Every structure is written in structure tokens, then in C-alpha cells.
Amino acid sequence: NTYKKKGVIYQEGNFPNKLFFIKKGKVKTYKSNDNAKELTIDLYNEGDFFGYTALLENSKYKETAETLDDCELCIIPKEDFESLINTNKEVTKKFISLLAKNISEKEEQLLGLAYNSLRKRVADALLTLKDKYGDNNKENFSIQISREDLANIAGTATESLIRTLSDFKNENLIEIKDGSIVILNDKKLSA
Picture 1: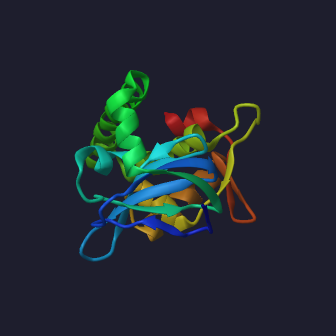
Picture 2: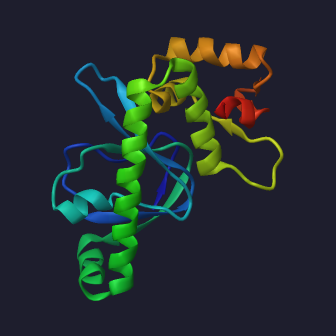
């Protein structure tokens, strides 16, 4: 299936009936509070599975999945996924590994949101994007992402994010060109 940028793949509270695999594009998952404020909880790239936690728990989705750009997704029906999990040890191991990694990442994310300064959270959000979507062969990582999406990843208000990006730009840590953010000095950002 193909989805346009900002397309909702599934919504929090829906029951899952399929597993998703990204053939092309980028996807985010997020939670919303009662005031419709979003917090991005995960980022996915080409070659990633998502939507499996609710399938494995046999529960409703606890987050919403939305495309960050145009995407091409492979969809695996719930019955086929369950059959693979129940009959193929390698598939089972793969998803246990994905779940364990997911738990570790969430613990780190929660600690960062609870204890890191705004500056550190914004820097970590940029470095997370670089780790997830960067090309190791390119000297400087560049991404076009809305300020609202970046603020949701960093767990801050858009206005605070914009001020922090301006500080980073003045310190020559990043450059902003045609709406894209270019990381110029990831070592100083990670400090």
C-alpha cells in the first residue's frame, strides 16, 4: 500500500489486524494527551516493522502511526503473522529482540524527558534523527522535518524548539537551508 505524507496508518484505540513493514519512506508513532498535544514515541525507516506490539498483546493500539513522507508499506495480515510467530523460531526471536530493544529505547527516552534540559532534548532529537535516517557516507546529515514534528520528538513546545534551533544555528552547530536542518557539528551537539 502507498500512503502520502502525513497519512494516518492506524489510530490509537483501534484494534490491529495487520503488521506493517516499511519498503520505502519514514513513519512516526505518537501519543496524544487530552489537549491534543503530541509526543513522538518512535521513528521508523525503510526495513522496519511496526504495529507489532498491539498484535502480540492482542490489544488496541496505544499510539497513532503517521507517515513523515510518502511511503510504501508491505502489509502482513494478522493471521499470517500469528502463524509465523507460532511456527518459526527465527521469526519469534526477531520480534522478541525488537520488543526488548523497544523497551530499552523507551526507558532512555523517559529518562531524557524527565531529567534533560531543553537544549539537551533538542540536540538528542536531532541526533536521533541522524542515527535513524542518516547516510554514513555523507559528511553532514540533513533532514526536512516540520518544527512541530521535531518539537514532538524532543518533548517540548514548538516555540521553545525554534529558540533552541536558533541558538544552535548561532553557535554553528546546525545550518537551516530551505527548511532543512543540516547538522554541522554532531560532536558538540552530543556533548
